Length: 411
Ligand SMILES: [Zn+2]
Image (cartoon, rainbow, N blue to C red):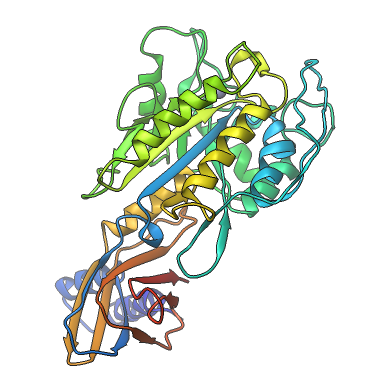
């Protein structure tokens, strides 16, 4: 039983007492009980090698990284599963695969060793994308379908990819019911896959001027914490200070292959932009998107697989496990949830000689969150060890090596 459950029981118990005619508990006391059930305290001890005073703060980005990089593939095309998924996690990339639209949504048929970033604690984590999907187009498995199957969406979701709401029919034209586009898609994914999407991506296409504002309003009023749209925060978001995540509307950089298929000139220019973003002095969150990632440039709105592979491999080599270790390549919802929690926790730090006690007050975390991770930056020259035996969280750290990172995984 956790503290929240305990408080709910206490609350019920007090209520029953009142029903039985014991009026000693005032409404004021009930209010206090109710409020205290919303936050929760966790704590652990740190033992340092030296008595020098350490400073502990939430990491701007998870694992003390400098650059959070989120990439979304819109519309739920099968190429995401056939090529990007094995490219990132390692494994056999699909060979050419001509689909129902006579477009090659396969890849080069090679074996990928995977693209990874480091967590700072000796583990490698694969690059991950977000899928922005329309429930109406997801179906049963067929090798020739242009869109993903339910099983494919489930597999990538279970491996840590995010799934974002892109409207049930991808409707944009005059007469669109923006409300049901948002809600029917949420219901469809909940019924078929068992989870609730909590971020929206405005679909593009033939439309009345300002239609995206209707989507933004309906999505934010119906369970979405944020909306990717045509203007707003981003694509470069400074995360050095508190980030205004409340009903956030943000823009993304659109990447696509050029018609010219010789060489990687277009990708090199996108990489130059990426490099300039990565060099910014503050920790930042950068957002990009495309549609298909197969061999054919689907609807001329996509990255051809050779371009996608070239681009992502270059980023991994420069900023990931094989590079300078500055990147946290994670999809939108994962980064959003980290920063949300980062900005709401309250840390109390008390050091006495070589021992310290860290107490963290946690907010009530929304049910639809997938991630409950806190990353702490420790400013010290001393090696340290953590002492904790709480069942409420798992804690790991680099106290014996770099001594600047503590990761708390809340249960
Ligand atoms: Zn779309």
